[in-house]
Image (tube, rainbow, N blue to C red; front, side, top):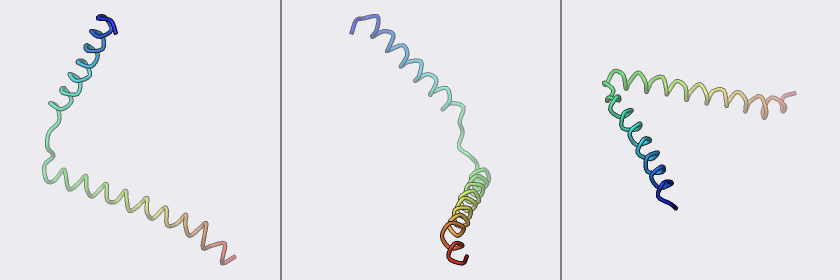
Length: 67
């Protein structure tokens, strides 16, 4: 690998690291209330997806047995 390619690679890696550091500086630890809200919404989403999967299971496996 010649020197110019190495410098270009090092510069691109450096710019990627700087971008990640900039994002990390903007982040903050959520308050307890924010965390609980996010956890509740995520939990409701998981339950909704699971319920939809259960309905699809019933529709595909159990209903044909009844018909």
